Image (cartoon, rainbow over all chains, first blue to last red; front, side, top):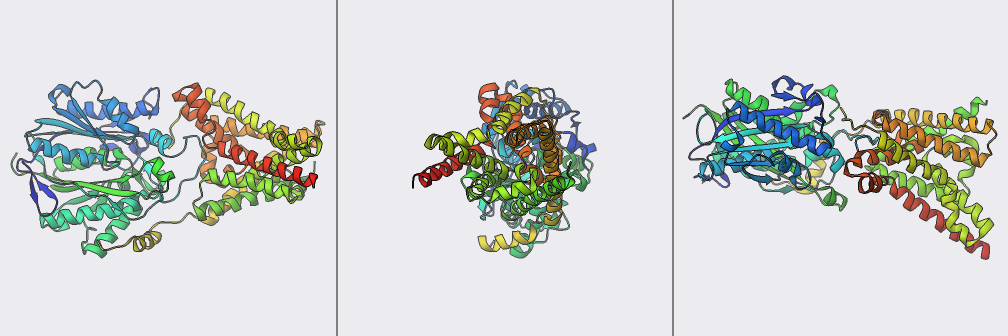
Length: 339
Length: 121
Length: 147
């Protein structure tokens, strides 16, 4: 059973193992700096589907199938699937797993969904509620644009602080044993709302929540930032990443600079015109389930904090003038130890 | 062909767009609000007789921006009220801008049916 | 974290890059101006064919809407608009773009509730407030006539 340490952090008594993982991305993400390190790069973002929503489901299903295949498993070997996306009622994930024949739980944590799924999944495995489960998350630029912003063919200009919703999906299988990469700790974060109302500056809306969760986690674990090889946030983008480093330095006296990265800042090249960087549930999911976990396998990273960040808002709440709250959930992944 | 007409259309039309760009960048007003503001402003300006001189000077430079849409609504109303009185207040505007509105609807449907979905990069 | 909302707003103002105003303006000016010049050419063409001033104005509107709709359908309007900003939003071609783009996008939800209903999702307010303003103006004219 997970044990609470400090104020909010959970330490797993039987740390769940990451048995397999896979990332599937769209064309633009495939052309980015991490392009070669994903399991699948789409030839066409539509995947011959009838709608962009189905294209997203297809992408998530691809990531799930690849993860299962890499782990030599089938969907029937899973006790449950925890998945989420940005579409209304999480329909992208629901449709992706409709034929899986296993228990399904839809999650919504906006772009923090992958971290939420891993943290929750780890609790379920550690507590014995599941032997093996899969956590997945996805987003698709085209389905997100039409739901949150403008039609694709609409001629609008993006603000320099706007982020680009990644066409990407990631999936990871957690089990009780069978791998030397384990989830040792998790923390569920609280919502932090600092009055940001601009939906094209979500990095700024999420940075305070990331600061809150990361500082609590380090305090609860009694650890320094440099005790980790890498601390990554989900998708704060360039603006949010700058803000979270400043907040942690000025408010918490923590310097993350030597070990810090942000999935949203890593996903695209400068000249790809993604403005402040990537976002969307798929952004952190594909960077974790592709490059980061590969680096852990190769021993380049031994201890990692993966902090998913989400902006909690809806098109309706934005039109009604509500401020955007951020939320951040994190897991600690370690390689080595008892296998 | 008078090249001055083209030059005037260019700089007046360009200036209207540039001013709107400043408003968009500075105020974060959404484009939809800008469009609404322009059309209503066009009606008001023409109502005070201020837009006709701009149209006379710049031609398409004044009628192609959405201010011109408001201008044609107002002009249509003024004509219809003079001819028909109260009824004209209701029919004049849409009559004045009928070509643009009907074209937008019909071409909107037509091209939407012909279009193929395509992702952005 | 002991930071109140106002302090955070100040901080994020500093950290958030602004739009490149002069560059944006120049591009809006050039492309917006160019579209108006095309309109002038179309209008001259109709006048030369013997249309009255009012008829050629209507024909010009229809032609410009057609051009805007065609470029939108070919996914070219959005590419120009990325640079032009207000230069492509403000001309009547932008009105056409605002009508065709949601119709294209929501075609997947059916011809009636998708294409038909969403056609006016962005440009509808323009008609609502434009026509309302014109009727109010007409009523004022009627009252003034009566006086």
